[in-house]
Image (spheres, rainbow, N blue to C red):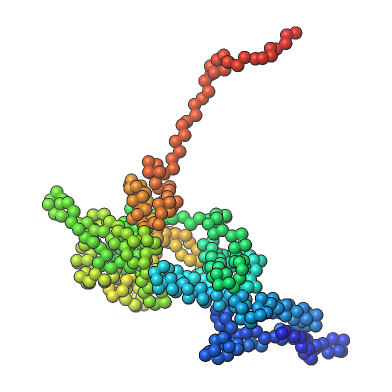
Length: 488
């Protein structure tokens, strides 16, 4: 229980000593998840460690007010468990957050949840939620506190760019994910009888609503000529850039297959299926190639994390155009040193050593065929300089006083594939299958402006209005007046 203690000081007023007043109390020591720390690790349900806290005030009235507040809070926290000290509702929010994450690990082990999704949940809790609710008894979390948390998320600024400088506010998507994760933990606590209802459900928030004044992110699909220009720049045909002909082929591969960056990193030599097509006029066979998208690879904390594609429909087969199939066949037979190893990475990484000489002149770093290419690093060190060299805008995060730039991203090569296919007349349902979209509706929502009218795209075919005929007024009316006009 909190109490007030008078502290003598050397300060005086009107030649009289002026004391200060300290409010002192104890609280359980808690771990990073907000759970009480036991005195003995071998007895997790035994006595808990305590920390001694104090606050100093200049007047007795202010100190007593704070003391009453702390005692009232303690009463609210424990009033739920008069007959049972460790009642479920008295457990802190962090206790249920940890238990919920453990339940998600079971789903990961059973293939019902992706590892990267679980990692995102954990990051969201630590970054936005636990500092606020981790040590609070879950039964004392109110709808009003949930509203205040949501308002704080809306006001919070993100830390992106160099040196963790505060920049723009959190995006609507980040707010939605943080709020959803918070609500999932409360729902888990409700299922375990810790709370009678979920207080977050009583807050007016819908993540699928319009984002209001937030600008919608615009895609930057490239034209075939722009793809060629960027590819040539990556190949070293622009002064000042190192030559990476293999990565130039990868740029064409991404733009003409539409696969995602993580899917591209996950491709192995055995994922390309080559067949022979009809013979050409000169009798030589036509090479065909189909990509079998079966896995993704992401670089996390210095390790490669292998996972499944984004959705069930993302596991797909994508055919390549004949000219690109022939180039991929030549690449494997003439350039790839591990062409006979089905599990070898399709695209190489680069060896450590940097991309600049001491004098500042760039040079091509030797390739590393033992691991995939980290696509984020590829964008920063190779793709972005190529975009700038050919006059295309490149995306960049905010840095200090410099706002973020919304330019061409690596993902825009996927949009390039979609728009070129749709504008060439390929039906949007087929494009949706090649992209691995979960629904055809997603393809319509994303690329509706590029879908031809005959395939369901919007078209405005209202006829041109015609001018009223000059003789229309002279035509006799078929309306018979019931009351004639009086004369005189």
